[in-house]
Image (tube, rainbow, N blue to C red):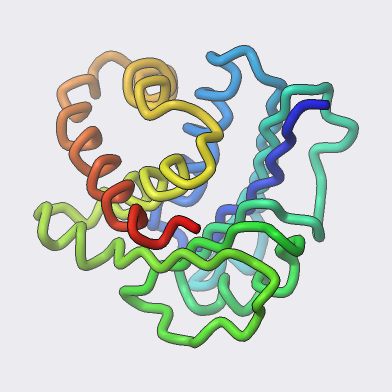
Length: 186
């Protein structure tokens, strides 16, 4: 029986939530896994929460849509955290942007990882890297896909060869995200 990850990526429009999901999807595909990516475009996006659902599995995916049973939840802002915290399956992983989410997570049946992505992005001098920093943390904990596949295959597939010059900055961002959670892994 293979592993199936049901990943919810959520945050404000402009935080790279959709591309985070697409990178995971493309990387899973490159690694021979079954994948799906379902973006949520709707009225809630304007100034609110943008989100996508990603499934990466070793087995065929029955339905790409899920509302509960999230195994990996990425909350980049407070509204996203509030919307999804109770939808994470027991034993699942919740990654929160601790630069802006200061709530103390009351659930004790999930693993919580606090990643100060905005602060790290400030240190790196580029706020556009917040999603890649968070992705580094997620990959470090879950091992859904390899960082190399994200950087050298999925990134180019999503953004094109003309953006290859951005790979070193993204590589540094992935590494910093991974570093930020190493001491939190249980």
